[in-house]
Amino acid sequence: MHAENPDSIPVGSDRSQPERHPSAPDSAPWTAARLFELLAKLGRLRVVSICGPSVFESLCEAGPFTIERGSLNMITTDFHWHVALARFRHLQSHESIHARSGRNVLFFELREDVAAPPFLRIYVHRAPKAEFDPAVAEIFAAAHAELANGVALASGVDAGDAEADGKGA
Image (tube, rainbow, N blue to C red; front, top):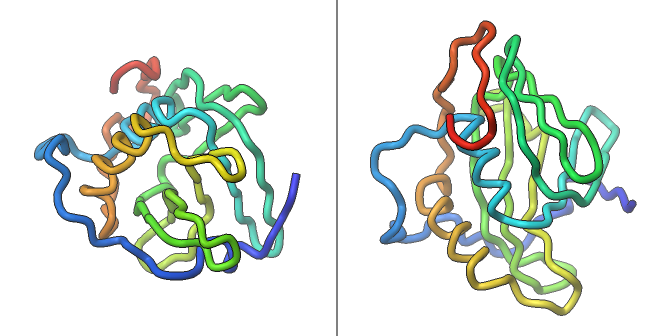
């Protein structure tokens, strides 16, 4: 596991203003459940959790999740993940060129609100010197067409004890 300063992770030219992807849906609101369903389709992920001066990174694959008692709870291939939905209110995608490696990076930032610093970055992972799987790049591109400018998340569930099975919200 390698920790870096989160401000130095994605720097370089940002291509955050894509044209609308032809397969991007027009009406489905973005919710935590929709994001985590998408993550399951993107294969291996690099999750960077930022908490004050501490940065934690891990590689994992998204798994099934539930939404209950105000939290999204997911078991990944490598750890349990709990996100307090009341505090996860803003989502933005990025496609950038990493300053040190010169490689294209695809990732999401999760925030408590649009003005807050991100508390989580989720990167689409790929092996060194490998290209993104074309199917994964296409899935990301469709989401990026909607998320490049950032969106406020819709609750998607009752804040109480609603449950989702990770296969549809």
